[in-house]
Amino acid sequence: MNFQTWKTLTKKRGYPRSTALKNLDTALKNYQKNPPTATIQQLRAAFDAWQNIKQSQTNTTRNRRLDQQGLGPVQRLWRYIRNEEGSHAASQPGVTHDVQTNTYLTDDNDYTKVHRKVVFDTIGTVKSAIEAARESFQSGGFLKKNEHDDLYKMWFGARDTAREKTVKDNYDRLELIVCKQAVNVHDDYAANDEFGHAYRGNNNQANIWLGEGFWDLSDDFTKRFTTVMDARVGTVIHEFAHSILDAADERLADGNVCNDPVRDRQLATLYPDRAINNADNIANYALDALLIKTKKGRIP
Image 1 (cartoon, one colour):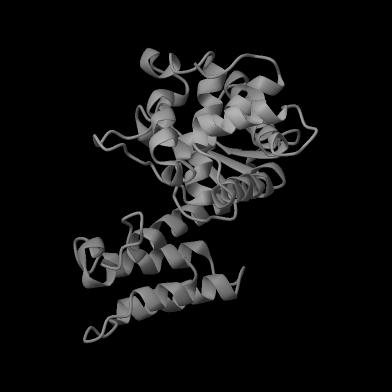
Image 2: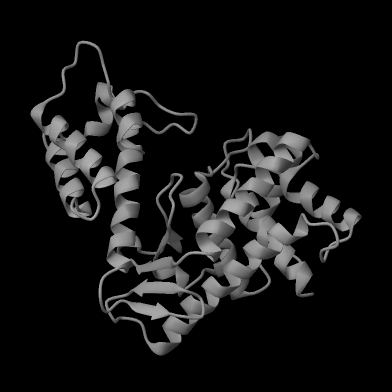
């Protein structure tokens, strides 16, 4: 959510901008134009001050220009701010950094060495899966042409030049942000039983917040995968797809969210245009590519 987009989307004839909203405009412009002079704390404070004027700014006229994913500019700005706060937290002195995976871990020293190893191992495997997905599109890679064709159709449906370019571009961007830059992992016990979450958008840094579910995966969840590591890796890529690619959680005609391999495959077959933008399909393709490359089977 850049400043000019924010101003354009929240402009409403007959509704002048209040002092608090003008202050938010200035804070956003300064944050994006004058770092590090303008801070994320100043932007967050300006947003909160404007939001507190009414119980929920998400219901105002300024948030009615919904995009194709049903989100208005206020929700988009909120997600942008939260992601930027994650990047800021990871840059503070004393944050644990794993050199091998280039991962910053903000855990308030709650994690044991075993916890930290699990996190770093997961991120390392996530990077390998993204790289395997990119390699799968290269001629002479680890997949034969017919093998790549089968893998692609399973998660993205019928082959189409435009759709395939979108898929390749998505993995190129994931590699750029996740594999070639630092990854920020944040402990979030407030997420309760959630595995983890991220803030949707086209964010330029990888941030993920881990909930309790990351450590205590349910049987219902793990049975979708061969190993617990596969479950963790698949879901982390899923969240990065939300945050970096602005990927959606698509639904089938019956209203069910496509968040398990069975429904994801059905989405690919029935709605390939939507499958290429479904976070689960993006994650499943990458994980499946890695499993094939390392000769460790396939997603069940």
